[in-house]
Length: 167
Image 1: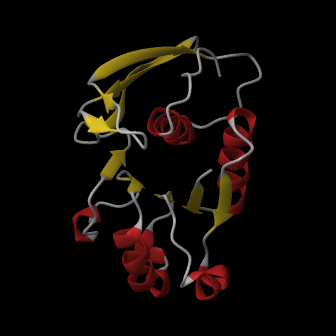
Image 2: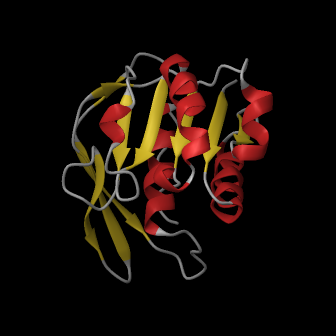
């Protein structure tokens, strides 16, 4: 059982939470925002996902940095957060469309998306995630945005779940 905290807008949070629950309903997913942060000071997360632009929520930043230091993994969207280096964490996984992100997109078409994992890292269970490219087919009913797909892919890899073949 794991605990994942997500800093994102409500719609993005609900989408990611729903997709994670499809794979494992034992993982607890909590929404981190300015209202909930005060009540989460003593909670230790396995993983924290930062999908919001932290420059727009400065009041969250310092408390969030403290929480991130204690988390096993921090996944951050570098398209929204260029100053991610200020987070001093052991396992920082960057996601985004930029070429420096650890998890990025090498190709995106109407039919599929090619995700590129650019750095070896140990998952939650100590298994090595090797550098790889993975093609995922897009279904007609796909509602996920590219950044949400990257986050979901990263969570699935970290928690040792079978990778989705189709979204």
